Amino acid sequence: MTADQDGPDHERGVHGPGSQAPGSHGSGSHGHRRRGIVARLRANFITGLVVIAPIGFTLWLIWTVTGWIDGWVLPFVPAAYQPDRLIRDAFGEDTAINVRGIGVVLFLVFTVFVGWVAKGLIGRSLIAWGESVVDRMPIVRSVYNGVKQVAETVFSQSEAKFDKSCLVEYPRKGMWGIGFVSTTAKGEILEKIPEDEVLTVFLATTPNPTSGFLLYVPRRDVIFLDMSVEDAAKLIISAGLVYPPAPRQPEPPAEPG
Image (cartoon, rainbow, N blue to C red; front, side, top):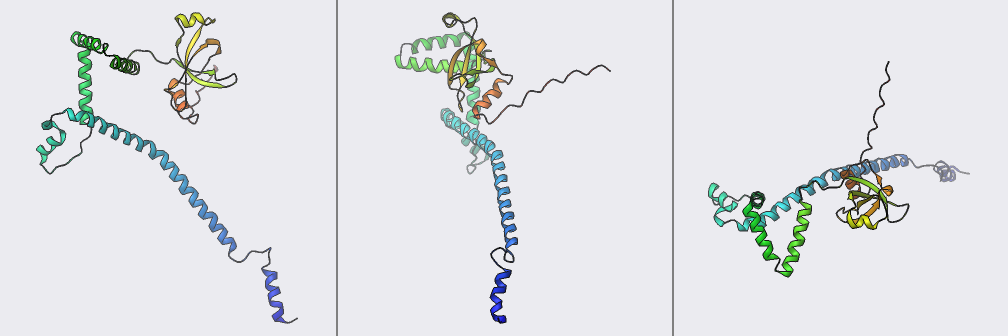
C-alpha cells in the first residue's frame, strides 16, 4: 500500500469518532464561561429589581396621591393665591416651577381646623343639625351613614384592636388558617353557642387582609401564636413567603461557680 493510500486512513485513526478536534475543549470552556456571566448578570438584575421596585413604587404612589390631592384642593383656592401665580409674581412671569404638596398642606390644615371646631359645642351642634337634615334624604342618608361608619372604624382613636394572632382549623379539620383574635363573644352570640368561652376571630384572606371571614371559635380550638399581629399580616399578604424571625430562646441561667 502506498503512502498516498495510507494518508486518509491515518488521519481517520488520529481524529476518529472517539477523539476531539483541536480547539473543541477550548470552545466548551468558553461557552461555560459565557453562560456563567449571563447567570451573574441575571442574578444582579433581579437583586437590583428587588431593591428598586419598592422604592420606585413608593415614590410613584406619593407623587400620584400628592398630585391627586392638589388637583382636588387647589381649585378652591382663589386665583390670586394659586402657587403658580405667587411664584410668577415673586420670580418673574417666565418662571415655571411644578410645586406639588401645597394642596396636601392646605388639606391637612383645613382638616385639623374642622376637627378642632367639631370638638366644641358649636361644632357638635352644627354636626347634629346637618345629620338631622341628611336623615330626611333617603338615598343620601344611606350613603352618608355608610361612609361615616367606615371612617369611624378606620380612623377611630380608641384602643379597639386585634389582641393576638392565632391558628384555627378552617375550612375543614386538618387544614389551618391564620386569624386575629379581636374580642370574646358577648350577648346573644355567647348565649346561643354551648361553650364556656368563645373568641371572635377574623380570618383574613390572601393577599388582601382587609377581607375575610368572621368566626366564633371556642377558646379550646384556638392555637395562639407568639408572632405579633403585624408579622402575621405580613405572612398573609406575602402568601407565606415572608416569615417572621423565630423568637429567641431565653438563655439558661449560669450555674453558680
